[in-house]
Length: 314
Image 1 (cartoon, one colour):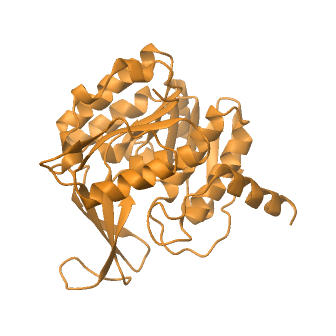
Image 2 (tube, rainbow, N blue to C red):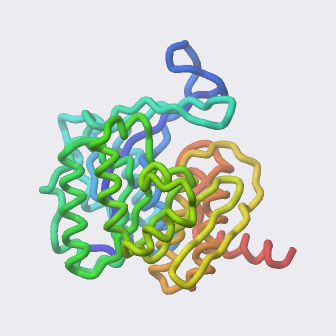
């Protein structure tokens, strides 16, 4: 049992060494790095001090071990991560375009994490759960989608808040059915942590405020629009708040949004004021891009508070 639970892919990431590299050309890559959007999120939630758990699967191999050791070291409850003897841990290859966009080549659906199913979901795990967090990247096959819906059922039964990061990946959301699955989860969510183009994609409403009001009227309590190096905006029924991005030198953008979400929910879980949680999450997202590797820039709450004090004293 845990207070913050997520589900989905655990994998290693292998990253292009140079900007502009392409998958159809020979080039150098570095890695493996522990990764997977839900894994990055839950690693950060645990590092910030919350009782956190991930439901997933890895192979009984070195790529699985590097993830298990990393998550355990950060304080994540790994008891619901299955090690599958005859399957391999997932892999994501990443290249970086000159305009800052990224392309991914995934080995997920047919890897160990592709075997997640409803049998992985146990009701007892949700009895003390305060937040059940879903990543849109985790709807990669039918079985994991049904497992997510079963988790949502138990979360709602025990009064957990459902949080959702659409995390839309063109390599995963390949048809209208998968888009509709994201919309279904979106409309069930209490907390939405989205990139600024993701709400438009899922609601078909181009105006941000109109899109946000639509979701608030559908029952969402908090909606955050993440804008990368241009900061973020928080909306609720009684609050609209902007936060500027904390200025850092960007080394690798992978995992920034996941760190933001992990920090925000972990702070809320520990009773932080929503404004303070939002500001600390923004700092965590910025810190995440300062190191090469999806989890390498994850930070503790103590580190974030220290940076925040330095900002306030400037």
